[in-house]
Image (cartoon, rainbow, N blue to C red):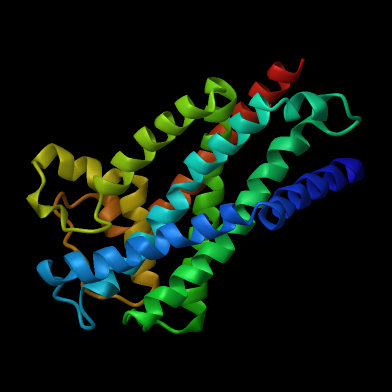
Length: 264
């Protein structure tokens, strides 16, 4: 067990060192979310009525936060597929290390990168008028939710990366999953204009419940309305916790088993 933990720490350090050796990864990981903040704040913000003190940006930022950590799924899958293509996984297999350490270390490294990205985004949001009003404890809890949500989704990315293997195909699969989840949600606009069936999908969508949970923790009283009167829309904190637990319970064992079968 001691050696397995040491192996995980070593792989995590390797993930973080890549950010130093390939700074373009870090730059583009932070620039894209900031571009989304500026785009939605100044291009679409004036055309969407929020009914929220402080304006649309108060509703926007939780949606941008959740969208960004949701894309961890795609970035983890692509990174793993590229390592496999380069033969790095084969080299790890030849070393006397814990087999699960490779993928666990990758998820930890991607999760730590999310912390930096969220800090940069929060700074950008604050600069354009975003102000959480719930106090430091609830605001910190919201960011903890975001961190764990991104970590849970990264395990789906691990399974996708191990299953598809080709990096270009993995990229397409990753975005095919994340784009519907983020845009068929309450992240950027009310769900009231959607067809009834899509309203139910949007409210049971993990992204929607996570956005609603973050808005609640950031102190928003008036959210984009609950249209289907569903349990997730009425209990977003509990539903988000349930989704995160279910994702990890299902996908961590599946991913580790897939990796062990691949390595055998």
